[in-house]
Length: 331
Ligand code: UT7
Image (cartoon, rainbow, N blue to C red; front, side, top):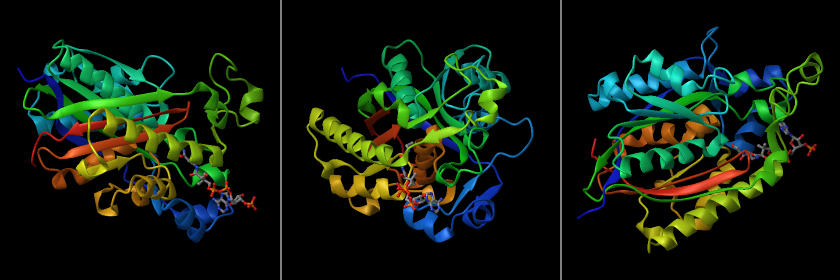
């Protein structure tokens, strides 16, 4: 009997309408369009400016689109996992708020905090609930309102991040497609290079933490850059080896969109032609947990049933990993 696998039966994305361009940033910090473009590949990003709107609102838009595309009613969702580092509130979690906003009452959900690798972690987790036969419909969301934790006076971080969300519907199939394998890793000793200093139990919010701007993203970019390239390349190779594949067998490489130079380095080291690498960083910047599903969403019409798709990501923690999936449907 063929193995029961979790297949993606629909993909959706949502980005806010407001655009923050490199020209806008030139007026806010000491930077230039030329520096940002050559050092990161980013031209613009989206910002969720509507007061009171949060990560769950973007996640709810994605979930509604997934329901529409897959002909699913809210009551049929059994589980929703939301990957995010910008939850609406520290508690309750954003997954539950999304479920409430889409009117899903027969299910449960929770958040996964693995920064830019969050979507991979969540997709792997959701796939196991499908493979075990426990659930038939699981929604996986990657969503971040990075503008809520970015210091728009810090030119080293504010040029990188944007807001956005994407997601997939997971269902069961035994047709040989779906999530095949994943290698996930983490190394907590990397936390000093990319983190938020205050607001958690180690350093609760205070007037002092506010004054020191400790509720924003802190990043030491260079070590993160190096670890990102190594981590993504190594885990892609491990997944290939475990599955007796070579890079020529891969139809699409879907890398986390953190920096065009990182994407190029990973592609070159793996010897993947540029035509097989999904890229949309120029439009959205780094949307953290949103980048991978936003890429799948934009390239959906070019994906064909049976395509071997390799997802790879690296983020704060450090967290990283790669996943092989066989695409389930033609659009
Ligand atoms: O998604 C999660 C994982 N995150 C990542 O993967 C991000 C990894 N890191 C990066 O993408 C890059 O390290 C950055 C884009 C963050 C920075 O690029 P870089 O090439 O590593 O620049 P740098 O930090 O080495 O800075 C080079 C110079 C510095 O000036 P000096 O010291 O050489 O005079 C910076 O002050 O560029 C300066 N600089 C800028 N100049 C103009 C830094 N940011 C800017 C800016 N505009 N926005």
